[in-house]
Image (cartoon, rainbow, N blue to C red; front, side):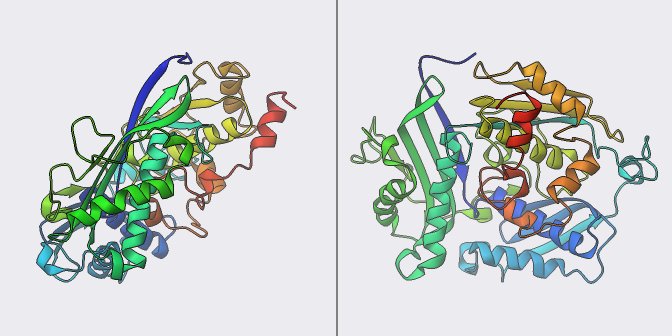
Length: 404
């Protein structure tokens, strides 16, 4: 049902230097390396980080020859910006433990075209996946998570491209935005929180910089009535490093684990989540590939004007290629019944949710112009360059659903 009253919704984002995101990027870098060796590699790589330590665990099949895990890990850490040994975690000082091994034969049997139940590539696991889209932003993403990502991305850009002026910023950061809504329409930012790691004695510089960044990345229409004064005071609109200094950060400040930021990775809580993480998993795992496909479908439906807001659920059984179920919810904004869209999905005339077809259509083995590591920071959705963000099915959707 469409809400027709004023309400508030909050989402958070984290930077590339957040401990969990460090792990996601390392896991996806390992995946990219394995797929460079064999595009059909089966990978489930988990990473843990803490003070000057990185642990890799999980499965890789086939095991890539001559892959230098040590170099991959250190290159990722250096690219993020952890290059100072005195901060407790850096590319030069970290210790690496590799506990990767071959994939379970039982799992491999389910996803192999030769040994799956149907003779076609089956789903790599059972589970439920969700896709979501709405017309709140040009990227068809909910406004709170979309602009929260843009804040930490802009701060990282300043740190990387202009170290002479912004070298006081260190890699770890979080942002959080509370939007006021009227019905399904975002009308204003009412609260903002930004916590950013910094060098000792430079917290005041972070306080000065954050309002500038908010003005740069959030449209002015959403900042009407937002009070940028009185930071961190009771009732303030803006909180910046509200506990004071944020000098100790990254994996030295808090341990990180792959797959622990699944809401940040998706829709900021505005859309439901099936519970499966993405990073470190090859596309035979429907946790990843079917979630990408569900986003692709939902985005094209909203872009086609079928609904202002769309959530799609799909479910699978391990080793079975056809989805077990579809569910579509337009939240009262649909121009056609949800059942009509479900029937379109079942027919496979416009979209095909069989794992092999998802992988082929979205080019998840080819990775043309993108890498899985690119998805591991900034959100998996709402950014150009990924095939699941293309709007190339709008015409077919309208034709299939009988809309001009």
